[in-house]
Length: 454
Image 1 (spheres, helix red, strand yellow):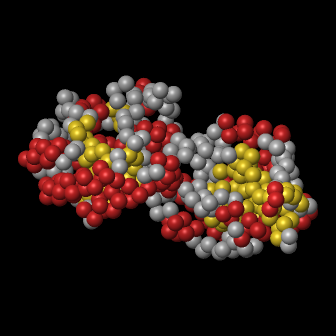
Image 2: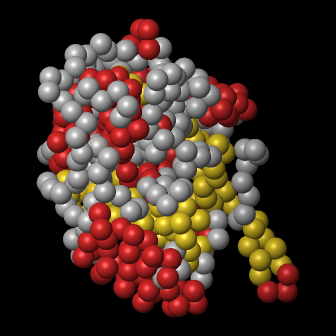
Image 3: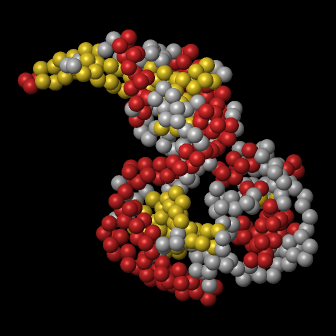
């Protein structure tokens, strides 16, 4: 990209006049202080938590948390950005990345509260108040942003190379202009990040990043108003439901014992919205057939061999036609909702077995069935694992198929990440070497297959 930005004023009579640029010296004096007072000039939703923060590589110019809950390291230069600025920014970011999340939280809190940055007494608490669905680990790895008064070709080439290699890096340049008695600032994005995809070693998006990706998808497809209308109806019809956002939609969870399980999902499709209902084992068995029939009458269609039912809502007009039927169906489904899962004894034994699988080891579905003295029940094991509540202490990610294939079709990225964090090597085709990592657990005495088929 070009290093120089120019601005002209257009007057009546087609008169054109160039706006005079501000000297670099004057702009240097105001840029950092201006960015601290108005961090949105760097990016929307940014919250600064550090300025001139001491690190092993020297003082870090600005430290922030983006609207997805990710840490951002800003390297500011009062001149044109050079290759030295790139290496310096990497140095700062790598020093922070070496810290454990809890250590990083203490570090940020300790060095906050000066040079225009608010004091943070407890960063963990500060973070959870703003990103209640995130964990501290979602701060890392840090993003890198270079800010300067122009950028040379080598620095830009290095930044582009790092970006292609999976490093989340961006380059911003600012230019100043005199217009009457005012000083104008213009920002130019030289290297732009891809905010909708995980980068670096992270193969997942945090909860806050998923919500942002979802919101962007709604904006891009012009579905914000339609989504808000459907979401409001679902929240009203499901007053006890909790919502969990993903990149493509929202899950609505109902209580099951002391946990919660998915009742339905509101998806953003290529052309409109879809509500999906899951006729799982949390309903009275004698009610499922009538619920399926009523779903079809209300315009739902069966998908995935009757394991899901989908209601398409492509426009406001179609929503007006289907709203009452959706509410009527939800009321019928709620009357049949059974908060006590069936086959409880089998599931509890199964989950207890998986809890005993050591860190860094895996087991297969068939192996679990054998341990329960039910070798024919491998498929039922899969159903029991899918029935786990979203918040669970059962290490579900340690369960794979008989060939070592990752066994969580709904969460392959998270399963892969969790296994790698435990030191388990996962191949490019998502397989684990069973000869190396399989755990040889014992059979559970007295376990029987009673209730599996119910």
